[in-house]
Amino acid sequence: MKIYGYARISTARQNLQRQLKNISERFPTAEIVTEVYTGTKSDRPAWNKLLAKVQTGDTIVFDSVSRMSRNADEGIQQYFELYEKGVNLVFLKEPTVNTDVYQQSVQEQLDNIQTTGDTAADNLISGIMKAIQEYQRTLAEKQIRISFEQAQKEVDDLRQRTKEGMTDEVKAKISRTKTGQKNITEKHLINSVAILRNCKEFGGEMKDIEVAEMLKIKRMTVYRIKRELQSRIETEQLTKEELLKRLEAELKKKKQEKKSKSFE
View 1 (tube, rainbow, N blue to C red):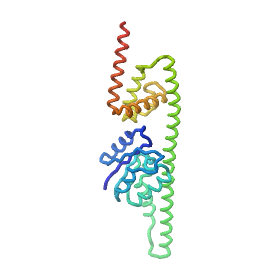
View 2: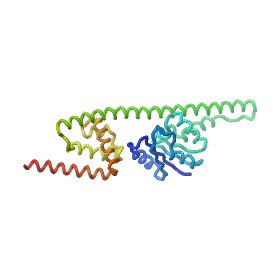
View 3: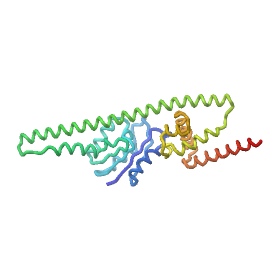
């Protein structure tokens, strides 16, 4: 019996780090399969390869139920296909839809029903058992669909915040152009270092709102700086630690320049 982890992002600009961290912390021995995938594609090669080799008794771990498929209908179909194959599914953010929870719920209902040896009665009991199984499946499908809807709402909310953040960023750039402010300020560097160290997306322990409160800045500013940091990581091909060192060096230089000017 093997344990697999499956982590998926929708675009190359997103970061797999959070999903990988969550899966590895709970299942350190899991063989993790990753995939960069967009909704415009009809195929997921890494996922299909995993489906081809997974066996009865194996486990697949997801950070969220929304990582399993593109939509609720596809997710429900794959959920029950894998369940009937004997594959255990674990969703870290939605443990109530784990297959072992579903199986236990069905079994508890069936354990309360016993055969009598009378053909007519047993046929009736068999019909009841089938109805219970169908009822439990309907409940599971409803829970999976709700989980997908919640995940989609989070995506829509993030897109809206990103859109608003981009508007703020454009305004800020225009303002800097008008005032001739081309260099990064010391405060911006301080905020960037703190966000890179503490935000969950970069391996930290704090939520965006907590970081915003700590730095006494708006959440939209946190979102904007996070996008800037992620862009630098991708375009400059840096690790988090390498970028952190660069930012700290820039900050140190900025402070030294400020100190030198104070003595002039």
